[in-house]
Amino acid sequence: MKKICVIEDDLGISTSLKLYLENSDFEVALYHSGAGAVEFILSEKPSLVILDVNLPEQSGVEVCQKLRMTSQIPIIMLTARNSENDRVSGLEAGADDYISKPFNSEELLYRIQ
Image (cartoon, rainbow, N blue to C red; front, side, top):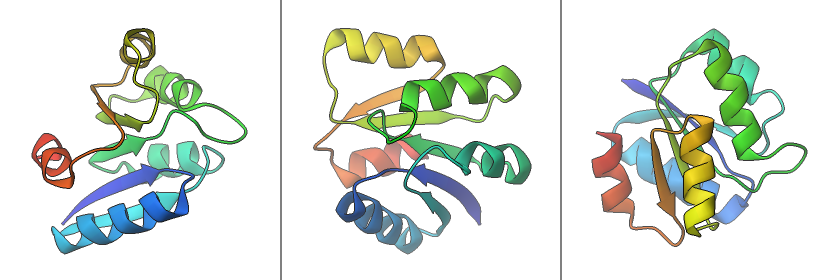
């Protein structure tokens, strides 16, 4: 079973996303901020990280940059920030894909696979 780390501070989105992914045969580790998530990712090495940009304490872009210093784990940014500049910033920080909210769960699953 593949493990996915979801870093999302919106409880409604994170809960429904976790349930959807678990029903699609993924193991999900859920974090509501970048605190602790980076250490978990670097030690547990999940197959994928789904990362929100707007997080408390540090932005998803900062989390992505920290991960890219030592890891090439695939990262999908899933965020309400959808301007061209936001997408470019996320990709420049090292994200492999960038999906805007609201999102289609089936499309996200396809991109994960």
